[in-house]
Length: 157
Image 1 (spheres, rainbow, N blue to C red):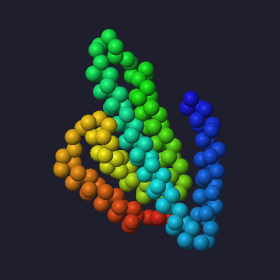
Image 2: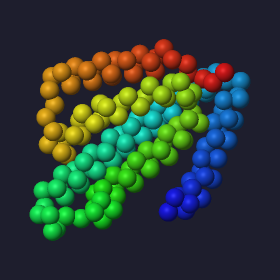
Image 3: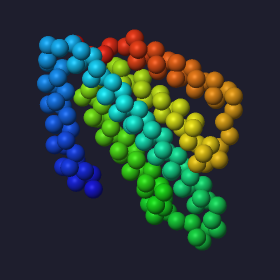
């Protein structure tokens, strides 16, 4: 499956890299300045995929543990767990593609948004309780991420 996905997505990733290199080598600074927003968006999608995948895995284990011992399935037979693992794989693809549009120093701070998405999804899917302390810490994470994106480098040297 991994080899198949690599063969399917590798030409796409190569084409994205060629397009981003062509745009970045263009003398027009507006094109390179606006291109990093695509990388930011792809990185946000990757963080959402990661948080959703982890929430699905947790939900799968919770549901499985609630069953009687004779009816419990191994992890590789739980469809929700496999969906979560698949989403984590998709997250890696979005991260890989986003690197072609924005510098890694800018995108590294975007992974903190996984915590924010996890705080939103965990109560909705897994029934976890979120405290005011959790919300205030996540507000700080959001502020820090926005500041990092706003003042960070928007093009690769």
